[in-house]
Each structure stands twice: as C-alpha cells, then as structure tokens.
Length: 99
Image 1 (cartoon, one colour):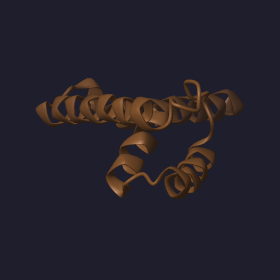
Image 2 (cartoon, helix red, strand yellow):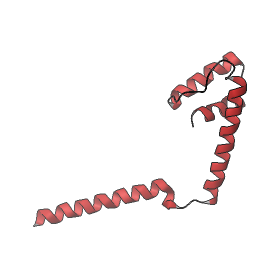
Image 3 (cartoon, rainbow, N blue to C red):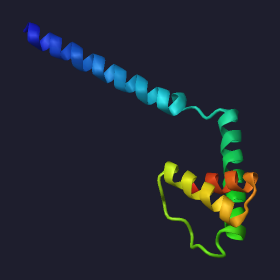
Image 4 (cartoon, helix red, strand yellow):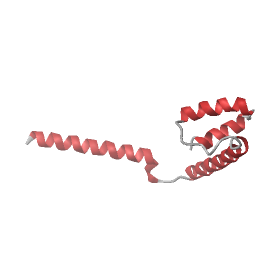
C-alpha cells in the first residue's frame, strides 16, 4: 500500500512539472501585444531578407534548403565577402534563411 502512494505521489509531481514546463513554454497561453508586435516585426524582417536574397543571391543560387543555424551563418558570412553584401543585407538574409 505504501508503494502505491509513493508511486502516485511521484506521478503527480511529474505531471505537475510537465504542466508547469508547458505553461512556461507557451507563455501562459496568452498572446500579449508585445508578442504580436514581435511577430509583425519578425515577418517584416523575413520579407526584407527574402527580397535581399532574391536580389543578391538568387542570381546564382536556387531557393535555400533548410540548413542548421550554424551552417547558415557560416555560409552567409562567406558569401558576404564574395558577393560584397552589406552587413545589413547579410543580417536580413541570415534571418530569412534561418526561419
């Protein structure tokens, strides 16, 4: 009987921890105005990055496949030198390729 209560307590604690982690990850399930602004800014940066990719990179390269963020960063930094891309363009392209 004591083992059942210990197991039940452990399962209850585990479920509580998992619930707390899920709530923390989703931000209590509430969209704040700040989050909406951040999403709009993120979309604007992604669209600007896509435009810069098309004008600077698409001349020689097809649409980017999904790479790891580390790999994308290395590729964009190397191509910045070769294609004489400004730092602002590089950051926008990096943002676009990492989304």
